[in-house]
Image 1 (tube, rainbow, N blue to C red):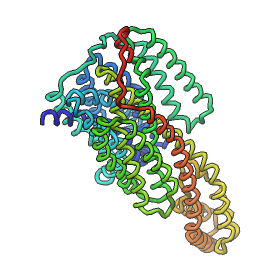
Image 2 (image 1 turned 180 degrees about the vertical axis):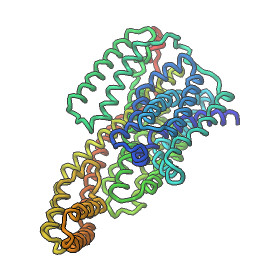
Image 3 (image 1 turned 90 degrees about the vertical axis):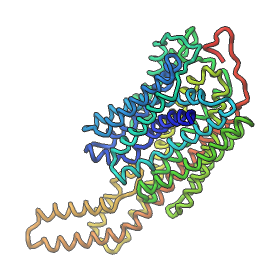
Length: 555
């Protein structure tokens, strides 16, 4: 019972840290409205967290190995709990973003130490089951954010997406203090590799920021190319320093093990796959199929709920039979789900969506636990902490890269497809007998002037009717009293005509937007084929080879 509660204390911190990478997505419109700001500004509530989280993961792993994993975990969960409260009571968007950055940093202290801390609580024979639980919780946390956020916002208010962390964090702190013992990497010295920390952090900061801003600035803009150049320069400095250092921050010898390197790349593809399943599909459900955020969130929970039993089964079995074919099968399922989402239409039933998500959930469950198992087995036991940091960083990097690529591909598809949609919508307006020439011109101007690819949605009937109403008020102010009744009648006829025409116009745009999403899903599935290739080179049965000359740096 003591070990179970100890494991629970670790998994609770792990769960809320990963949950908060996605839980705010669904509430961003309400937060934007609350602070009376714009989408670009409010996006940093999400970006700030992910940026700090991705940049600090490896550094946090190294510091935990050196100075104590329990200590770093407690600092992380405590800071995470405090910043969750501060996010909830923030009085300005600037405060919110600042606290979210601190929250992301504290999450980076929590996540990478959960695996080595958990391994201290179980015997080697039960580590397969542990990987199963770890994978299930990881998949559940990362994919259930939209649903949890939607439920909390619907039943309470958006601040509760942060307040919910407080009782969970406090419980994790109390249980950890009394039930978890301290652990270290015995081969690590207490000397901090400041040059390594700085060069790696700058490199990661630059590349993650470039990916976050690429869709706004353009992949070939001087700003984005400069960030990529800075990242490349500092990663070269980092590798050179680590190679020469007797006490490196990251043992580069870890990457000499093909199984570990392939596992890290596979984690990157899992992150990208999760974004296709959770991020892109949630937009499709709300923007194209017209479901509410809560409905979409609840449907998407089919994926993490399916992942739990598959992860619990695949963990122990992969420990016994090897990981490779579990990971390959999981990657195939995840890739197939993404490809099949490219066949969804406006009229697809909820069951059509759910069975695809079940397939993806099985893929995540079959992949996550065996993938962590092969990564852990590929390194010496005292290097599990830093290995966990690297794999978590690559998975997080995959999610950021996934969003950047998917948004870019989707925008490209929208730009290619929307002119045809606009042309068909204009043809519908021109053939209408219920609008006069002036009304037709105004509606056509409205359809041709809007940039529908900018927000990946269809024209809003309500917005168009609101503009007609505003135009009517403007004309009535200038018109003489005797002409006002005729003007009102004309605008009323125009309003009725728009209401009659709009279902067909909306159908035209929605079908084209759906096609843009379909093409994006299928392109993403082609990229995911790399994950199957990487998975082939993972093998939990490979044994780490430790160099006697530099035990702390080579595998």
